[in-house]
Image (cartoon, rainbow, N blue to C red; front, side, top):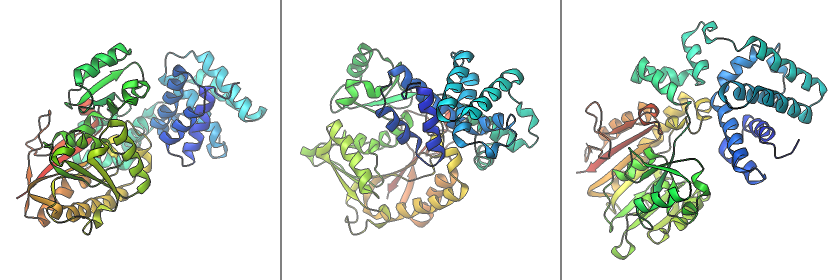
Length: 443
């Protein structure tokens, strides 16, 4: 068996992720150091993210076939998860091929006893089928296992949006993510980019959420020369909306208080003109992460209107004068619950205590940054979470402490719901990331 076999690499990658590695970093590293073709990369990626996405479900399925799950090596479990995932979620792969490949991997990574155990388990699954969720009597645990989401997230969603909306969200987050890109208005027109992408073999359509967005199909956007030359960048549709709500003029001085990896920073920079004094000041807590912002800015050709500074946004008082900026963006550090379709491990890693801790940090950042905004200026607060504790609750608390700010309508392509002035997007609304965007004006 080749060391570049995608199923073997998937098992090894998942085993490292289960021991604490970040999924995207680990997967990218494996792909970088392999000789896989595009089809094998697609299969590897699908298996890795699919197993993470359905982990609680796959554990439930597998444990019914194991006498003592705790005694089974972690890599063997990952191998069996990949097998079940391919059998029941990837209907184009013949069962025979899944069995043969899985048994070969068991033989390569283990000994003959493990090979026999894997063979026996797979045949048992084939004969008996998978257990029903109806055997789970506790309603909350049943939802948790069926949709592979931590119970506390389901409980919070039920309290905040009701049972029907919660089920709709849970059903949506296990569907594949759309691939969206943002065109770079500094270098190309949107219609020209669309035509050039089609000539490269991409399926292309306009985003219904973001003016700057295009939805691509058929292959990865990162393969395109248009990406490499900075004419477009990869960004979720929802993530484009905070900047689209800002109404930026070319001469503005703008603070991006939490900028890395730089998607929104470069989106701001596209609209600025250095000859008119326009500039975006990009802050982030970590110097290393700011290198990515600078790298993205260089690729997109906007380095002339952008500068970075490693700084905790809660401690910026000595960096900038009060009332220095025309607009401020705070894309605040958050739990990321809105990203659980795209980053499935979030659903297991985060706890309610993290949400409560982050809401305190978010309020501190708002209070620290607010004095740096000019009178009449706009402050945009956004997160990629869908929980009130980090969104509307933080804004309500901030407004109660800062009477010189008022909430105004967040204007984007989307219509606001329920007479809200801020924008709330759930993962099931448009099959994009969950997001919150709020506009505040300094009186």
